[in-house]
Amino acid sequence: MNLAGQHVLSVKDFSLDLINHLFNIAEQMRPYARREKITRVLEGAILGNMFFEPSTRTRVSFGCAFNLLGGEVRETTGMSNSALAKGESLYDTARVLSGYSDIIAMRHPEAGSVAAFSEGSRVPVINGGDGPNEHPTQALLDLFTIQQELASQSLSIDQLHLTLMGDLKFGRTVHSLCQLLALYKNLTIKLVSPEALSMPTKYVDILENAGHKVTQTQDLEAGLKDSHIVYQTRIQEERFTDQEEADRYRGSFRLNKHIYTEFCQPNTVIMHPLPRDSRSQANELDNDLNQTEGLAIFRQTDNGVLVRMALFAAILGVDGQIKNSERNVNWFTGLANQRS
Ligand code: NCD
Image 1: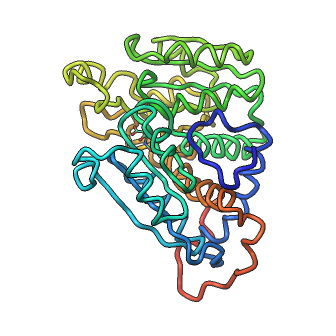
Image 2: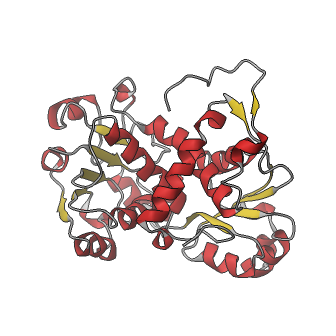
């Protein structure tokens, strides 16, 4: 698949070759994301950034990525602020708004909604998360981060030992990530969650059919032991019909300094799609890990900009022209020279 002019609705559309191509473009975006250089390759283009569900980093990093390529961003946030609240169909909204944009990023609480929206759109649509179903750009940035973190330890993704932990039932980021991991070989994957929030069978099957060794456990020590990477998730309370049920699982399988030191290997990388729920009754990823070198959560968020810039450039067909409009930055920026 060539990304030019395409929708990005699911990770299913990505082959290893395409991922490697995309990550190559993402690497070229570092100087612009670090404000060492400017490119205006998307000058005049408009992103319709439409978020019908709460979002901070996905929404802002889509917008920031587009701005860093020289494009403009128009935002619609919240269902009640759009004509969807007046009963307009996703098709009609898409038909109208695609007349105002060159590309659209969209998040919506219902599974399949972004695909339905794309049918009415005359421009490419990127899925920013559709209910509990998929979150392809998060999975791509997670994979990019996994590769980067492993490379810094001279390891590669084939033969990775990975723990996915928390709400694996409703967590769309891990659903998309599992499908990407199925493209690799010989992984050992441990799934740690309350039984009621375990990984849907279809994703376990995808991993097993790829030849990976998958273990499901509620034993924290067994789940964390020997993993190179632990990927923690938040209880997706917004997906529960019964809030008391969400309360019951909040706070199970926490990761903090004590547990990390006790059960994990010394260089274990900690990931989380964020936001982490830092309220005391949840606190699935404790602040006492903030100074731990293996904590990669903010490297993930920085990588999100690179990967989303790469997607925009590839989908809009300008990935070969990024340097043509390159200029130096002439303001002081604290972002240059930081690790990301
Ligand atoms: C995730 C999401 O929205 O699915 N957040 C994100 O986009 N980085 C995970 C979450 O909300 O828990």
